Length: 157
Length: 179
Image (cartoon, rainbow over all chains, first blue to last red; front, side, top):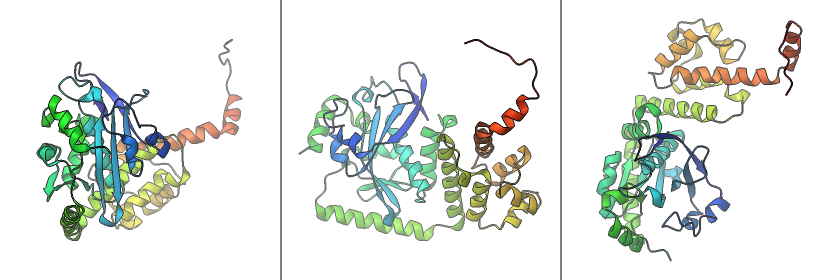
């Protein structure tokens, strides 16, 4: 996966890792994020960074629901430096969502990922390939594959 | 208690909704009754999708799963015998509900040869690697299959001190460097 620097177009190899419980708890009062990520300790939390560097560029909290063959994204946040027009890197949220889609394929969920965003923001996620299911948004099958190809596979950049 | 609505309100003072959605996924706040009603809608949708899944879709999805398993294993530094090239080919055949004999026919190789490959008695050759890529509908690239072979060779190279010593005896004029 390539992380793209907005100002220069340079790309960096990304790495996503699952945080253990202690790592999640240590995120309390992390001033790079507006949400208190220590509250996500009961969920699975993954971080995105540039390979070889420590700085966390983004976080995603998921709930695996095997009985429903889906992964639910509970919360996602790019670090403060990666928000808005002057963001440092372009594709943080896309990479994290695509990674969760990939994870949903490895669990034999056909890439099925759901989220339930604030209604004011819901329309914007449709561009990632999500579709509306009531107040939920869901992505699966071909749309999930397209998301994965776009954000995780280097020739899809 | 963290108020996600307050956080969103603060973010909206600085950023457009598009900019916020490009950087965050902030969950909606629903009452327990609303949440359960919405969950039931999603569940009905999800189970309908599963019921309607065709065999072709199932195979496609499972082959992709296999590809990701191979990629994750290649990313991990450690060689594992149970994750050899042969074992993945066997898993591939299982996903397709193909017998090894039928898969061998598809790949234009003798069944015995495929069997030897699966049980790691011989190593695959490049032509077969290309055929596997094509057979998977190009879902599993040749390079993935090939890297499985290389990963095994690397592991064996590192631990085979006997061969290293044996071959050292056949070398003359070896470079000598003082560190």
